[in-house]
Image (cartoon, rainbow, N blue to C red; front, side, top):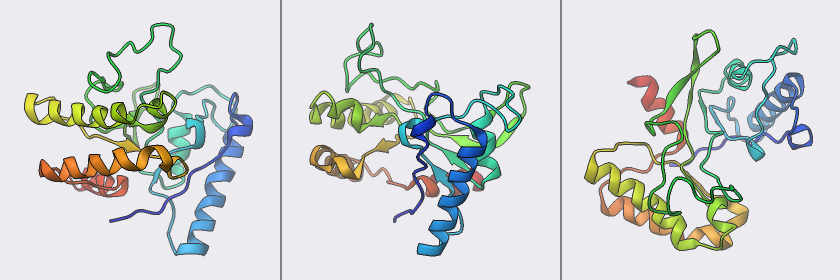
Length: 207
């Protein structure tokens, strides 16, 4: 199956994104999706550059501000978190790129956001743990595929269960198409279902 959603772009204020501007972008995208495709609002989202608003509408600092804003705009699953350490002074500190990838969120499972007061928000966070740009910048197609394969083998063979979220830019298909097709084939060979993010959201809510 397929999912149609938006890709909010607030890069012009990436260093200090404002709540009001980000909120306007979400509302405009929701309207455009409805007009063009009859989609009644985005249910899952990944922002361009992973831009994240850290202030509430009144200017108060809140690390969960973006999640709260998304919840108000009908988003149920946020995918604005990815493994990316190119340029790190510690190099690839989670291990050899492709095989020993960790899960930044610990479990690798989708979890609800909480604010600084410990209140749960009705929106899940899902880690992008197979991120094409991490490998495209290294010209490493095999690493891109092996990252996926390593996570899947570890999950099935060692009981380190996780959702494996793959990010593949359509405009970088010159790099990602071949390894992405290998990932789909490998998942099928292991009997592992491939879901859209909105299918995952539906499952999480039903569970």
